[in-house]
Image: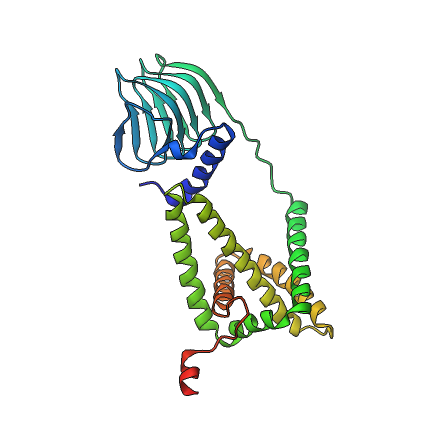
Length: 291
C-alpha cells in the first residue's frame, strides 16, 4: 500500500501537469495497490503503489505518471511516461514509443528495449544559506508581528480569549488540538485519494496552517503582556516577533526542542478552536453546571 504522506504531494503535481498539458483530471485512473495487468489505458494512468504491468504481446497507448510503486513494460506502450518516484522497468522486447522522462526514482532499461526518447531532469542542490534562513525567519516574524499589532489594536478581546485558554485551560486545549490535528490530517489525506476532493483537501490544510499562525498571535499577545511596553498593540507585535523567533530556536534543540514545539503548537491550535478563534470565552462544562 502506498504511503499517503509521500503520494499526496506528487498526486497534486500530476494534476497540475495534466492541467497544464490540457488533459482532464477526471479521465485519470490511479493504481494504488496490488498487481495489475494493464492492457488498455483510458487516457492517463497514475501508478501510486503496487505494481502495474504492460504484458508481453500487449500494446497500449496513453500517458503514464509514476509517483510510487512499480511500472513494468513487457510489451509495447505507445505514449509518454513521466516518472516522479517509484520504479520503472522496460524488459527486452518491450518499448515506450513516446518520451520517457525521469524526475526521480529508479529506472531499469534492458539492452533490447526500445525507447522513443529519454530525458532526465537534473536538480542542482544548493546548500542552505544562513543569511536566507534568518532572512526568511525575520520576514515571517515581522509579518506576524504587524498582523498581531493590528488585530490587538482593533479587537484585543480575540487574542485575549485565546490566550486565556492557553494559560488557564491548557490540558483541554492540548487534547483538543492534538485530536483535531491528527483527525484532520488523516481526513485530508484520504480525501485527496478521491482525486476530485484534492482542492477541498488543500483548502482544509491551508485553514489548518492559518489557524496555527493565528495561535502564534495569541502567544505573542501573552508574551507582550509581560514586556515593559505601555502601548498594548506595540507590545503584542513585539511579543509575536519574539515568540516566532523563540519557537524557531526551540526547534533547533535536538529531540526535546521538537517535543516542546509540538506541545506549543497543538495547545495553541486547541485554544483557537475551543474559543471559536477568540470570539467566545471558553467555559468548562463543570463551571456551567455549577452556575
